[in-house]
Picture 1 (cartoon, helix red, strand yellow):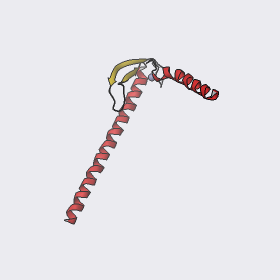
Picture 2 (cartoon, helix red, strand yellow):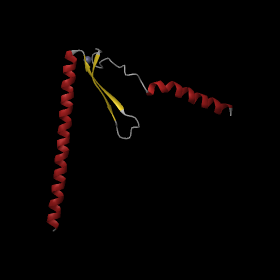
Picture 3 (cartoon, helix red, strand yellow):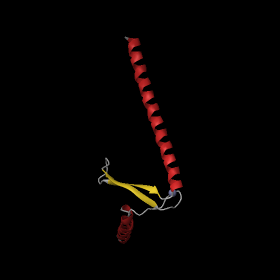
Picture 4 (tube, protein in one colour):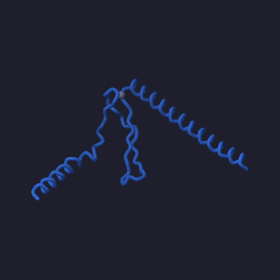
Length: 108
Ligand SMILES: [Zn+2]
């Protein structure tokens, strides 16, 4: 019984310690690339499916111009890559449907 109480106390202590971490202040204002100060570009609140509370999305820009140019390049490359993958996926889906239709026609 005594051990159980201790466990309960420990659990409460952990919860107390973890709580402030769940709602961290939005104060991460250093660039992960160059440690320069970040400038807030926009703050959006979005309702995301399966989330009980709306999520705040903050977009930052690095105050170091050279660094921001690099980041923009990387973002553009990533977006392009994503578009290409999406296109390839659509292409595959089209082929799949066409093949299915061909098979159907061959059977008929
Ligand atoms: Zn930077």
